[in-house]
Image (cartoon, rainbow, N blue to C red; front, side, top):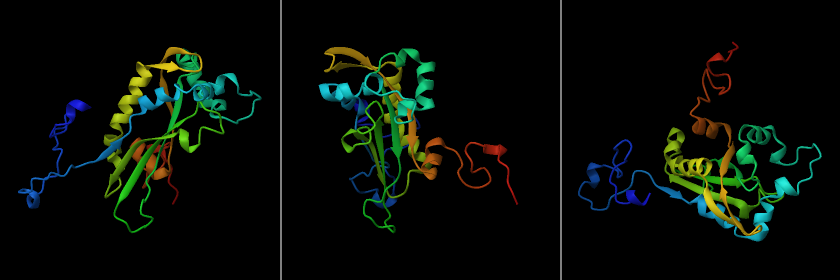
Amino acid sequence: MNELNDASSCPTCGTSRWKVSKARARNTKRIPTKVLWYFLPIPRFKRMFQSPKIAKDLKWHAKDRENNGKLRHPMDSPTWQLVNQMWPEFASDCRNVRLAISVDGINPHSSMTSRHSCWPIVTITYNLPSWLCMKRKFMMLSLLISRPQQPNKDIDVYLAPLVDDLKALWEVGVKAYDAHQREFFTLKVILLWTINDFPAYGNLSGCTIKGYHACPICGEEQIHIG
């Protein structure tokens, strides 16, 4: 992204990077149209494997987990097993990371009347044991969307850098060092789930969540009563 540091317009659609206003026409200070804080996930994934203790915990789901037929960890879910069946090469290395992202808006000022919206995008690593994967130290803040209004359907614009990195980690991978096994390997990542409420689900999927076709599963085949 460094080549776009001095860009004045979007390379995709050509929209100006700066807010255009007649009142600010003579003002030399330019205000960006959209602001995003992006925290690169790839260096943090690699750093997790540089700790022997954490690198060992990241392989717990395949080596130390008790398999008793009970649903105690995301590895016991049908989604996890489906990934193993569809992409056996990915599943063959237990160090490959399986993720979820949590998306929701918060009010940072604890006031329902505030005209400010803040949307943190948090990445969760499910390779870890069930008592660690939801701990604060392993929940990585990847994006922070801060603006006067909710991002709504424009959230895909903000998610673009994270999507690009996740695609690169899935298709190519990145060279990482496993401090537990003391060797280099190619780290790959897959996104299993998103964690969100129903309105955020509509923003992420682009589906209608209200009106006559509010059910994203039924779609146009939804049956109305009354």
